[in-house]
Length: 372
Image 1 (spheres, rainbow, N blue to C red):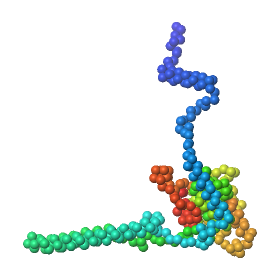
Image 2 (image 1 turned 90 degrees about the vertical axis):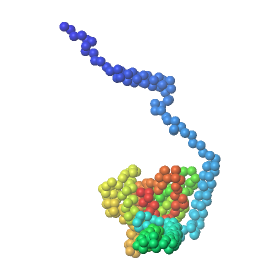
Image 3 (image 1 turned 30 degrees about the vertical axis):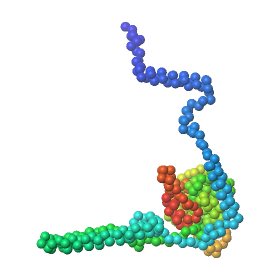
Image 4 (image 1 turned 180 degrees about the vertical axis):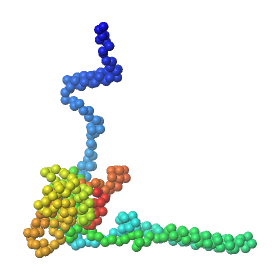
């Protein structure tokens, strides 16, 4: 008996048929749209990208005034130098360090806390004396028949204990035990290497002369940092663009953290991470540098090792060491740092860095650790 052909047909689920129908309908719509208007892209543009930016006339005037002021300052420093605005000698300052919390404390705030603690301690002592006087008056007024002698003695001792506890809580701040005064260099005079960070964007209110100077220092993006030899020429260039940069003398530990955590190198014009010492040995092996520790030593000493001309072996030897430093600095890609304040702190809490720019000396180490 011949088999019925209807029994061999497979049943297709209704949901699958609906999906096929929807896909066919979508293809037909796209084909019709391509025929009527072929320039419309298939990807839909969101409404958020069509926001029109409105610049007020006041903003344009402010940017023009800033550009004029920066240009005037650049020409003045280029012609006359920093004059009295930059010291030619090493300046030493003192900072207060909290040993328990391991952080720097403002000396003015510490003085305010000390005065407030002394005032509260004096008020607590006066209150304790008044309580003792009132207790003595109450004890004298109570008759000897109603109160036992032992009870009186116990009351007095309890009052003395409470007064001691109050005075112990409000002791003044002891600066010698909890806080330490540490001297540090407040400028970079006498240093061989400095680390410079671009703090401000150079978009609208920046003169072309400032942009050209920053570009020659390899500072092109905001919060990018580079190592520079602190020669007389570099010092003048940093003075010219001082409102835009933050620079100082990094310590050996800070340089090591920078290279290990934020270190990238330049290989054939590409940004490559320093993940292996083989990269260093391949690119800088002819200079005797084979690992990260060698890079840190060269960057910390500026290629000069702090030596004189005679101890360094003459001008030729110094030139070789300077060339080594420049090759290492060019080999490393500019370090991309993070912001010291988060977006929430900047926008919602309106926390700003204020007048933080220029030469910071050894204090640059704390700012670098905040931006790592």
